[in-house]
Length: 288
Image (cartoon, rainbow, N blue to C red):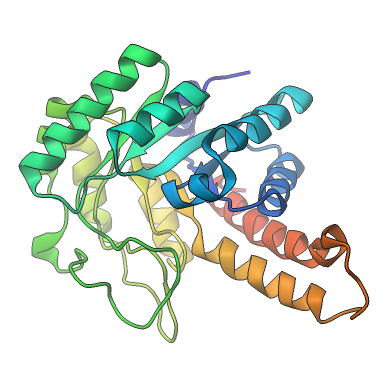
């Protein structure tokens, strides 16, 4: 089976992107895996610090590795939005394929220093683990939003510049870069998410020299996804859409037979709803 590094490289050659979907339970994991297998596409499972705290860092790794070995399938695992060296090291030692160290909310110098420290530590554990860094604060929660999160980079002057991208990659040694290009975590309750700055994405990709990752994918219009992928985005993160599908499906399952108490039967609707979301996104990202 190809490594995640090789899979990202192949995606670049084909100008497609990998879908990255977060999980908080085994229902979402199974739905995402079923969708990926149905389409024959590789997929990345994400688990943030909060999600890892709930499920267990090593337990998530065991679940994903179990699917990978049982089906000999390219399913990968990323330690999403990791904020401390200790948490990054724990994920690396647990066998994660990638670690996103997110210091985007910190001052520029602190982001550079702390990210470089994490890269060095993970390289010493396993140089094959992919390390991702983030520039710019785009909100910190995958939820339905009433307004733009305080301090989020949405004004043109606050977005990532090509010069910043080059300096960040050269100083820290990251393998992947997640820039602020008009994207935000979460989805707006009564409005579309902001549009992406496609020209900026192209310029950042040319300057950074590493594959780019688009965070906050939930709520972005399809045309922006297509354009962003065509100019350098190689991984797209989706979480809020997964959570909304989970809740919708669970509510449907609970509204059915009032005497049903088997969790796996109640969760069938959630699994089906999540799978439909993932199928749609994987088709779009994979150019199907």
